[in-house]
Structure formats: structure tokens, C-alpha cells
Amino acid sequence: MTAPDPSACPPAIAFLDLPAQQARLGEAIRRRIDTVLNHCRFVMGPEVEELERALAAYAGAGHCVGVSSGTDAIQIVLMAEGIGPGDAVFLPAFTYTATAEVPLLLNATPVFVDVDPRTFQIDPASLERRIAEVRARGELCPRAIIGVDLFGQPAPWPALRAIAAREDLFLMDDCAQSFGGALAGRKLGREATATTLSFFPSKPLGGYGDGGAILTDDAERADLYRSLRTHGEGKTRYEVLRTGMNGRLDTLQAAVLLAKLDGFEDELDRREAIASAYDSGLEGVVLTPARVPDSRSAWAIYAILTEGEAARTALQARLRAQGVPSAIYYPRPLHLQPAYQAHHDGTSLPVAEDLSARILALPIHPELTDAEVARVIAAVRG
Ligand SMILES: *Cc1c(COP(=O)(O)O)cnc(C)c1O
Image 1: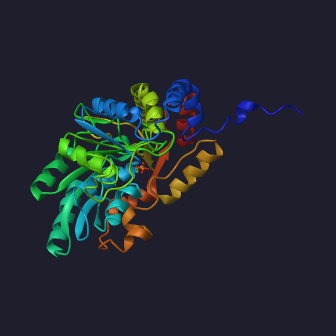
Image 2: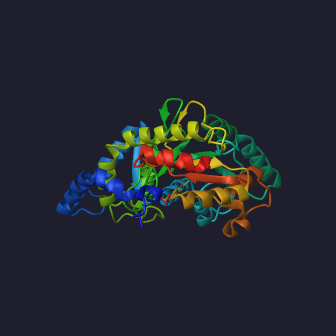
Image 3: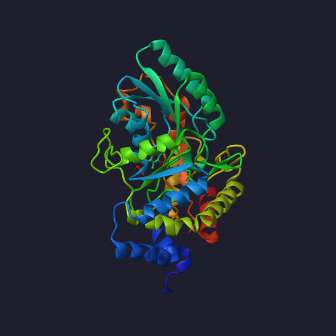
């Protein structure tokens, strides 16, 4: 009997490779963590402010406020605008649940908007229709638009700004997936009045736990965000000006993120190289993601479109058999989720519904080797 040929069954590829990331960055991260262990200022230590300065400088934004998660960042921004019962907050149906959950937490109503079939970003024409419908019905007061930079690419910001200005609506950018991306040569972070970031470990700039931040050019709003993240405090700790929350970014996460920020541009370049390799290797085989014109993607997710749900199931099984992981973002648009259905007006959002049956994400992270990228392409090509 001959020994099994190890090349016949190569090890499975990781969808997200945190151990490999640690092997690459571990020393720098440990040095940063050690500094925190030495000064023991675990809450609002100096690393939080250092990270805030570094992130604001990176994005060219006036102010950055570190917070406890991307979800809390959205909550603080909407609380600062006083959004609450009777208010309509417009957001894409094809996004992560956190975008829609926050308006409901504040007793406002999320109004779901359809998306573009090729870039997957919020569709300005659908947004205009939805705003007109809500105004015509007269039950809710339109207050805000949350543009989501989905999968690493920018939302159509010039169109969203024009609609927000014309309709007199607050505009915020949920940039949880896309920090590092850019539009018209400008890094994301200044497209709306406030931009929220997430440092969940799987995001392009990921910490080793929960974390988030808010970027804004508005000094008054930045002060309000700082107050809201610390129980609504005023000039001193025991002056309580408003209802806030415990929404602080912890020092250890800031330390990890500072270490990771150093190599972030290189990681984004590597993600772009992988996306380009997928684009050319898969052209004509499946629909590859359309690039938003004049943009740079942070490539949080590289999503292809199959012909239908059966084709996707078959492709996913074939990939799995070859050790190639894949994932579905998102298997159900938000307006059809049990938690949101009761708050939805029943309008069908055909693009979001169609995408959820056909979309499939391939691994894209900076630790992927060229050989692994070639294996992914070969497996998809079948
Ligand atoms: C991840 C994510 C969030 C929430 O971020 P957390 O840090 O996990 O709270 C919000 N919106 C979008 C689009 C996300 O992908």
C-alpha cells in the first residue's frame, strides 16, 4: 500500500485567518498590550485617545470618538439627533441586522429600501420612492437616512446627500464594513454628517473583541457623542446632562487596533490584489461584483452571484468538498426577517430578495496565499 498523497487533499482554506494574522502581527500587538498591563488604565486609557487621533487623521475627519461597538456607534449617533417614536429611518434592506435594530431600540421605525443588483449598495431611486410613500401615508415623520457602505465599497454618497438635503433628513454613514475604502479619491469617513465604524474581528480593521468609533467634522456633535458614550456626563463625571449609555471603547482594544493600523494599508492592497485575481479568474463563470465607479473597496466581502438558489447550493457543496469555505451574506433581506416583518409596510423589495437567494461570498483576507487564491478560483470554475 502506498502512503496517501498529501497534495491530493490540501488543508482547508480559512474564511478568516486570525491565527495567521497573529503570527504576522503578534509581537507588535503584545508590546501594545503589555503597555496597557503596565499602566492599568483599562477604561479610557491613553491608547483610546491615541487611536482616536490616528483614525481621524487616517480618514481626514475632524473628530473621532471611540465607542464600544459598531452597533453602539449607530445608537449614539441616532440618540444625538433625538430620533425616537414616530420617526422613520430609511436604510437598505440588504445589510447586517445592526443597522435596522438601532432605530427600533429607540422606538423609531426602520423603513427598508431596495439595493442595486450589481453593486449591492442602496438604490437612490428606491430611497426616493420610499420617502414619498412614507410622506404620503402620513403616519411616520421622515427623520434620517442610514447609508451603508456594503462589503467594503462606498454607497452612492453624492445622490444620498442630494436626497437628504432636499428632504431635510439627517444623513449618517454605517461604514462598519468599509473603513479604508474611498470614493473619488477621498477616504470614507466624511461622506455624511456622522460615520460609524466597527472593529469586530472580521471587519477589515478588526480588533480582538468588540469596538467601534464615530467620525464627524462637527465639533458640537463630537462633544455630544462623547457625553452620550459616558452616561450623558457633562464637564465633570458626576454632572449628568442627558440619558446616555455605557458606550466606551476599552483600552486593550484600542491598543490592539493601534498595532494593527500600522499595516492596514498593506492589508488593503493585498485584499485588492486578491479581488483583482478573482475578477479575472472568474470572469464569464459567475457574476463578479461590480465596482462602484471611482472608488476603492476595503474588500470586507467579495461576493459573487450564481444563477439561482439551486446553483448556489451546488457550488457551495463543491467548494466545501475541496476545502474552500464560502458564506452567505445575507440569506434573508431584513424586511423578511421575523424581527422586522411586523414593522415593515409589506412593500416588496425585489432586488434584495433576489440577491439573498443567489449571493455567495468567497474568502478574502490578507493572509490568503497566491496558491490558495488559485485554488479558490479553480474550485469555483469546477
Ligand atoms: C458589523 C456591522 C455592524 C455592527 O458592528 P458591531 O461592532 O458588531 O456592533 C453594523 N452595521 C454593519 C453594516 C455591520 O456589518
